[in-house]
Length: 287
Image (cartoon, rainbow, N blue to C red; front, side, top):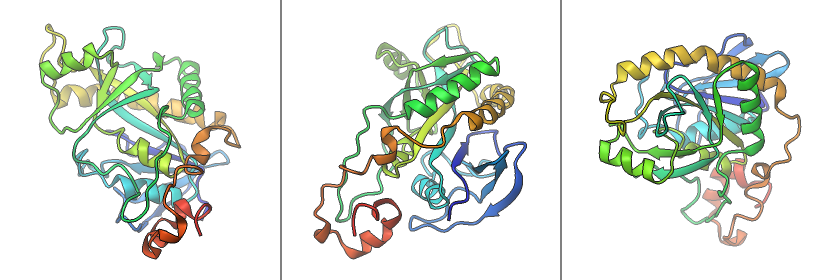
């Protein structure tokens, strides 16, 4: 069912989108279980929007425990073609200040305990992931942030860490030496799963702190991060409202056909159970 074209996965502190009309709660089951929470669907203007609080309302789910496969599958099942992810992050560069927004273009995966693919169990697919964030959607978010007068930085390397503990000072200095720009716990496996689902995915990454590399800084605490996030929520809402109007009607990026040449298993060898389970994703390529 085509309910929404744009999905928003809200991070810590963002549990709703203002201005939605015709709202309905969708309680969706997927072959991968329930998503993090009920999906709130409605319209901003004439555009269908679906909102999913990543950690559940009330923040009940750790980054490692997130049902990311269910989240992405559920959004795909209601027609979502674009996902705007809202993420908090620490900064490795002085010029990326708390309160700023980064629209990242690259990823380094430092997670360890997360399943990051829909495939396996008799079907193999190798998606192109050189550019992990949709460049077209990322540019729309950047331009929207600029229009809203928000301090925004286009491009940057996002390190996705396991958590839930924050980095040690040694880890933080190591990542900084790699040339990384920001670090957070939630952009993966979402970005990989969205690409497998042929959904455009981009991040609004809110800088909340300087991680722990800066000698003069105090150790990171949750209360400081949450306080900075609260100040950033209004910025996020402004970006999303402006971005909705700027998202193209038709997609020309490679995200939309990511599976076209990715599936390497012979169709006749794919187990029927897997064909059925993944039909939403592979049905147009495998019958």
